[in-house]
Length: 301
Image (cartoon, rainbow, N blue to C red; front, side):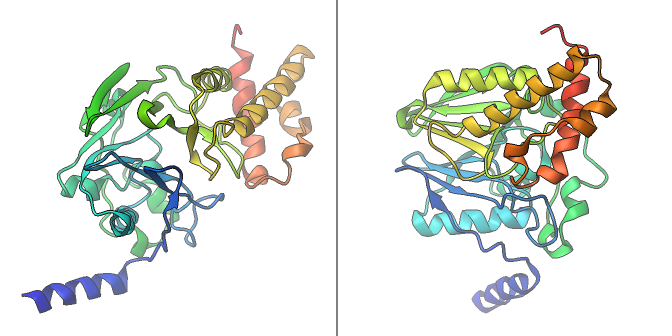
């Protein structure tokens, strides 16, 4: 039987994509896998997103399960090399699938998965965005598993004696499903894709005005560690890149609107030279201008 098990594991290893994950220590109890600052492709196979593990004392709290089942398997395996603990909960910070398609693995382990109540409105895609963009060997065994515990406004509980506060943004910021996860004992807040670093933010499902307001609130919390969904910067100033970009974009779009310029003019002529060399500028900038213009055109703010 033992020989058979070894054979099965060996066979699986031959056919699964190796993410080559390396956990990075953020603070005394928090380790994160930081994804590459690039778009999803068959080279990174979804490893362009952050997934974090917090040592709560007797268990790990997982913040975002990652882009595939195989990613989740490998991430937990690597963390157990540091300290072999069970998992108490998995929290999905929002509905974009690069952050939660690893849920299937944790469901197999019997772990409760927490997410926004907005997940109740989600329907399983015939083909996920991740499935369209990664290789078959990376996507193997990946299924669409939604959370089974939901946050509407706020949920507070304890894990191994430590307080966890999960707050729903309750407005469309990056998405309409954004959650903030705050652990006071370690002065650490996980904010999902409210914060990007090392690459341009994506406004595709967002509201630039509410997003900026949420960043103001995060700044006011004065947490020592502020961990976003993309990028490796995690200190108290990690919000600055996203904030400064969105404020400059907002002001440039507002000027076009005030001058009576149409959306085509805004997309063609808004330039942000200080960001032109940032990863994914060429991919996302025009889309971000389009989204910001359409949001602000009908806003009373």
